Image (spheres, rainbow over the protein chains, first blue to last red):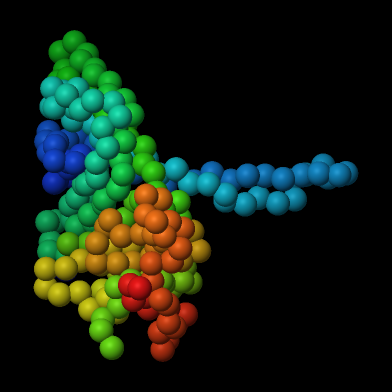
Length: 138
Length: 91
């Protein structure tokens, strides 16, 4: 069976050397934004340009202790594999967010439900030009 | 000539109806051009107008900020025979 081109569930999630399991959600964002310009007698925006991108990632896990153990400011590569929905070879998408800085961790535990924690990460570029968010397939 | 260390793929080579298909369309171009071995992967980054692809997710287009050559290109680029792609060799 060929790769489904559908993804479901996450594996091999980690930040630096810290593996993160019991993962229930991962989010990657290119963090793009646009700058608008208007001047003189303009009454509408005349130019919209993408000047800045700030890629980010967020991971949610039921392993609260592990996520709470990651100190804010810790720098490492954040990796995650989005699995092929039917577990077919070559259908996984692997992401690496280089220079990922742990921004914050929040823990949450509603009554009568499993608790979870969320780690948010921001990243910086090694050279100011290269997008720190890379992807491949496996 | 040795295999390229990096390639630049124009955004125009991206096609597909969903995110997975679009990623695959770039990786289909990158993997053979980078001549990836059996245990190597092609890693691509969206650079807004093109994709920068190498065999490591940690590579950068320019020398990093901590390097004495900071801000200067790390690769010498030559055009590939087809499709507006550029092949890069580390300097």
